[in-house]
Amino acid sequence: MTMDIHEILKQLPHRYPILLVDRVLEIEKGKRILALKNVTINEPHFVGHFPHRPVMPGVLMIEAMAQAAALLSFHMLGTKLDDQTVYYFAGIDSARFKRPVEPGDQLLLDVTLDKVRVGVYKFTGVARVGDAVACEAQFLCTMRRVG
Figure 1 (cartoon, rainbow, N blue to C red):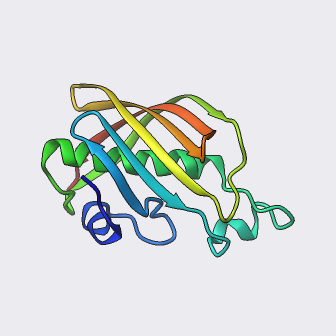
Figure 2 (cartoon, rainbow, N blue to C red):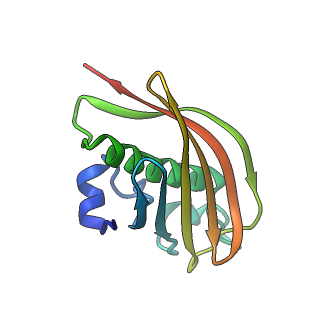
């Protein structure tokens, strides 16, 4: 299964400038997602990070992987996010940054669901540019009803 930006916008509450998934290339239900983030010079963080050498902040790479993870979770559950549900980070472990990501790069977000326990989802994510690993991390996410 794939998703274009129109389907992603129906699934995630994020909007510019924090929507960080442009396309879903593959989903294995309940197991893995491969998504794409096109990195462009007109993104607002590049104005200050860094003016002389624009580099995508590491926290945004991890956020992009978490957004892909949310898409995987919603697909697995057969649900869509609504105004009463929020998908949160619950923890980030073993984050490593191996290569700078610059404007013009395509960031491939490869996220695997490791386990689900009491409403907490554990993922392993690897973000690559081509074959080179840019970032990897393990992270926990959870969905909560609000209001």
